[in-house]
Length: 103
Image (cartoon, rainbow, N blue to C red):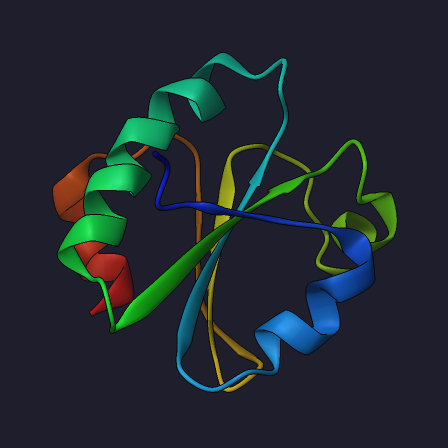
């Protein structure tokens, strides 16, 4: 069972406005590095349970949100806290790098 939640364009704004740290993985089904990133995010989600929620957002079905945040490469990961973008990282990263992004 995945600990990553799927996000859709319709509930994006209300989701990121919620309290706490939220990491959004902007991905595409056709993207190889995105697929390689998923198990890393799964591990991070388990480590950070209760402190961080991780969502996946398909850029092909959420084009308005992707344009709003100027997503030009996938995977792009954005950390939000209280609805505000705090950090952004682009490309395939290892678990240690992801830990430093969210800490």
